[in-house]
Image (cartoon, rainbow, N blue to C red; front, side, top):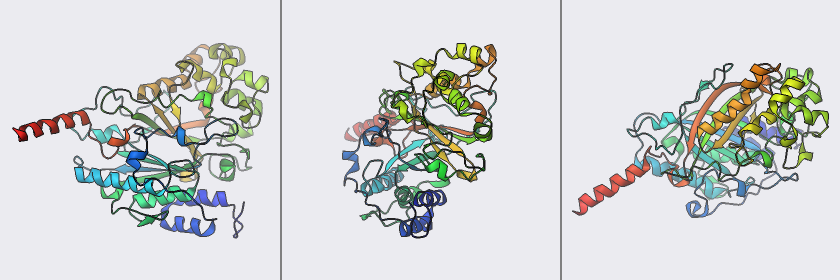
Length: 439
């Protein structure tokens, strides 16, 4: 659909989100049809779940039966600075977050958000994180990668089907809007406690990659299919390939109800993917050779419904030896627990830096779960014991490069505003001081 200026509205909104700022938000609102997003509750703390990452209940379901993921995304990388947070700063951050939650309902059509914290943020405290939280500093996870460490103190993840919503929420969080969706905003901003180091943007959904493929990393002839939700042309987050939110939730300790978040910045090189590989080869590498030989995957893969049928693919090592290629999804079968994966994917494509890329965002109970999954993706044993190469014909490894990786803790909602490393110790200390005062 084009607006009165003859510009495809979806492409314009995506471009506006990528540019960001009050001017881009204003231009988007001026050009587009006015959106009608219900407001959020007056008291989000009472209305919203304690798990920040509990998005699934707020997501609609696609015709294929999978969760529909919000189309537009903004990631704000934040730095706190020196010292430890004050209670006043915690109150300010919480007020800013609650302000945008009152403006928009908690849904894909409204706004979904999380705030997470890196191990570098927690280094400022004298106490270590509790043993129930597995949050090491990021590192290279294969011999062929050398990612930079994403050492921002915090990441805010904003998601909505409406680009105007994520842009409006971003501006409000930065203290640039007095009113959002008709709701007065508090005299409090994230930027009262943080500085914004970097903003990252992205998108996911049928048509958006095709509309935004005029970037480095994608051949000039526009090969991305019109119905593809991601640059590589296929559905990826099938319900059968996702664990439950319970599985990725921390169960014990003061951060129970939270989760860990891994965030990798990947660049894509799709020249061979589209110009040299056939459709059959792409299916083989993304899913498995069995699916390619038997025409299991139609178009982007919506015919698969919620189940990509990985059990039909056979043993990865045997396939690699007999076919000379092994599928990306096929390798993941070895890291399932109770017949389900152990990381919850919420990744999306990006044109940051005018290059096709992926912000690979996953949630898992421990960062070790992500490491285990990534090691299976590397397929090192397959590489050493078959004709499959370290990256060539080894799933999709040869088409992606990890340029940055970060590990973060997504605290439960009650601790989301500048949490201490040991909230349990702080509570005990406060209680002890109270007893002394009473005495």
